[in-house]
Image 1 (cartoon, rainbow, N blue to C red):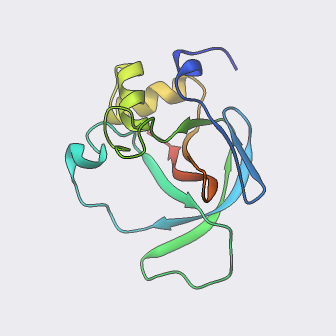
Image 2: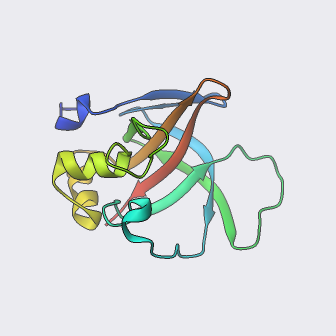
Length: 146
């Protein structure tokens, strides 16, 4: 993959439940998705800048029933962009959070941000966190689509 301005912008590498999440490396995993549309909170959760797409969570399939309104499936990410969730764990939706950093570095928001990331060759974003007590994990995953 060609170098982009994002290459030095909080890229991460995480192994969670045996799955490697690394920028540009394909990964297949089970996911869950809340089918209900999220309420609009604007800047409070970075919704004013976040890319558009299909938001999912990596949850190894335990066979347990899902809550009403949730679905599960399997996804293949061919060229994910894997980023540190935030450089300040107390402010994941502030200026050091992944959504704000992407908007700042690309100068794009929402659908324009999604299109820009896809033009750079990414099909998804995987935000990750490092927790000394519980280990590294994915936090938010977006399958990009316009």
